[in-house]
Length: 117
Ligand code: FES
Image 1 (cartoon, rainbow, N blue to C red):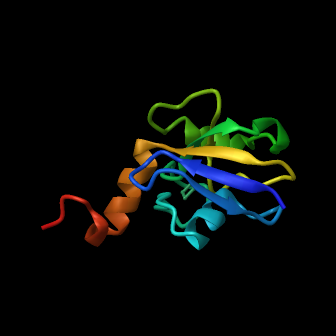
Image 2: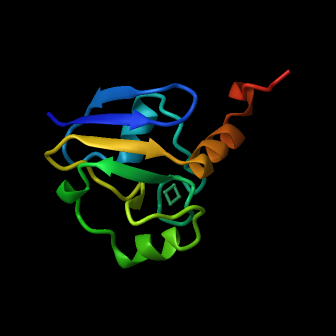
């Protein structure tokens, strides 16, 4: 079973096992990893923007719709993907959360903001 290491953000590294075919957003939500999902995972925003640091070759290529949405993102890099569109393949991945995604997650969960109170 492939393993996905999430890096970046306030929680440090998280390594989780993943069923092939699960999306990175589904996996993040399952394991309480702070990946934003403003549109609910339907490729209509860029809040699940992440960087695939390792294992990118094992993934399906981005669709035109995903590329279009990524064009609206911040700090988009050649290894940028949308977490709700990426399905885990059969190889391990290293996935870095972006500031854009973290900020959306905090907007969705303001009670977890470190500066709260
Ligand atoms: S959650 Fe909106 S595009 Fe992924």
